[in-house]
Image (cartoon, rainbow, N blue to C red; front, side, top):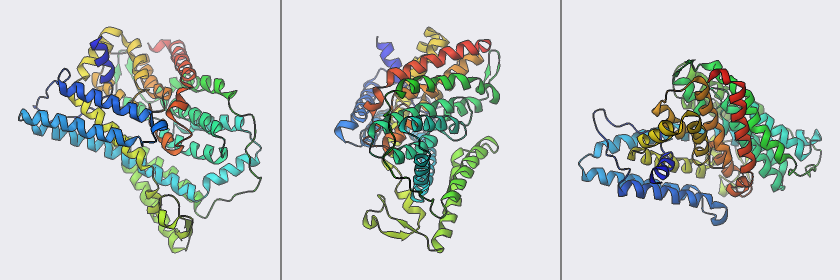
Length: 471
């Protein structure tokens, strides 16, 4: 029983921290430091899950837990005269978080800029003028999320489509909730069959894995298209009848995009292309392309400013809310969802500490050595419903089990779509918890977990039948 408990909690692990060559880390998995750290993280996540009731922002408990966990580790290593190992590991995790934070910050800034330029309001009015009801909009936004996600990342796609849903949905919380769930499932599923659609898929592709029956190259991932589509269609079909069968309450007036709105949309697409190009062509982190794209937005914002363009100050500028102010890109940066960004910091650092403690070897032996590849890969997807799939996939790539192409595709898909079962299991879900706070919640998503789990099982079965030649 103890091994199963440790195996479960070990997967709350990091993008594994690297220490200096030749230095040995202490095995703290059975020590009071390791056990205390696991308990701290578990308690912190329980508090995150209860955000709907406590109204305590989700970043606070995980940030506190991260500080205590690394403090305990550092104190223990100091007492054994090995302080530099912890310092190197901590800096590595900070580097991983910095890339994630800056990537998200650029995406949020673009979304805030498009929102301020009435891009989503114009899309909302167009959808209403087209006569779509809530059920039709539910399918349209889900379908768009599925097909946009393979090009953009799943989190950016979810943020974009959720902004449309919230603009269209108005005060109908049930429609917004169900649409957000569909968007999260669709975005995660769409990202699973394209190397550019999800970070975990990209990690597997860039690893240049030689499976037992061939190379897992770029085009192989598209064998997951139909299984991924099934993963979204099954829960969406079950949710369809719960979506309100009515039309949005709004007039038929046409809302125009403000000056520069369409240019900002084009710059965002260019920024996504830069992120992909910098990574796949130049071998640089995608965040470099994102920041380069942000500079283009900054120059365009300067152009709008000198042309005398005004904007309405919003939540990020409390002193001037509702007043026309000169267009300033840094006001859009200030309106980023900082609670979400700091939540990611807490998660990355918490699981970084737990991984540094030494649970990786234990879980590798348990799941791949004793359970078998298929059961292990299915379990990986279930675990990714609890934590972000990036550290989970990194764990698998670090273990590097000897598997067929079919099994590598299976774990790529399960790690990507398994996070859909809980709102905290993927970047898309966590981001929407911040964007649609109070409407799209942990427990609201949890009510539909059985339907999502059915889609998860159906996608696995579809993959094993359609792609049986790859196993």
